[in-house]
Image 1: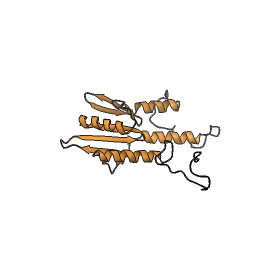
Image 2 (image 1 turned 90 degrees about the vertical axis):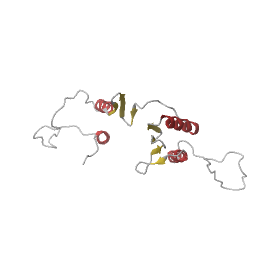
Image 3 (image 1 turned 180 degrees about the vertical axis):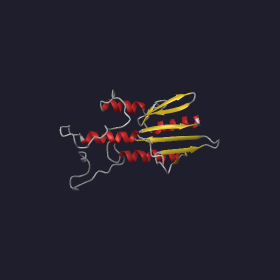
Image 4 (image 1 turned 180 degrees about the horizontal axis):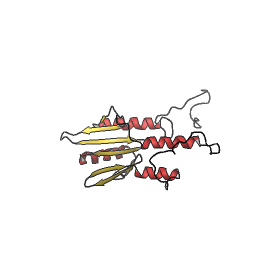
Length: 182
C-alpha cells in the first residue's frame, strides 16, 4: 500500500498505514470473516462444536435443535425448529451479505433428494462427472482391475502417465471411497 497524497507531513520520513478493517482478497480475510461469524453465532446463543469448529448448535427449551454448518463461504441451516431457523437467517442477513438458496440440493459433491420416506444422499453426479473427465463413461465393468498374469513394467511401448492428472484422480477416488468401517 502507498500513503495517500496529502496524508501527514513529508518531514516525518517513513510512515506506515494501519488497516482498521479486513480487506477482501487478503490472506487473513477468511479467518477474519469466520471469526466474525463465530462471534455472531455465540452471541445468538449457539455453541461451537468441539469436534468440528465449523458446526454451530443450539438446543431450544422445547427440545428442538438448530444447526448451522459452514464450508468456506457456504452455510447449511438445518433442524426441527422452523421459527429459530427463520430468526437465524434474518439475523445473519442483517450482518452478512447472503442469499437463501432454499432446500439443499447439492453440497460438497453430494446430491440431496427429498421424499416422503426421508432424505437421501448420493454421489451419482460426482461419479458421472469423474467418468466423463477420465473418458471412461462408456467403459465396461470387470470383476478384477487388471488382466491376469500381467507383468508390471512389461509394456515397453506404453505411453507415460501424467503424474499431476494421476494424483488428482487418486484424490477424487479417495473422496468417493467410504471411510474405513473398522
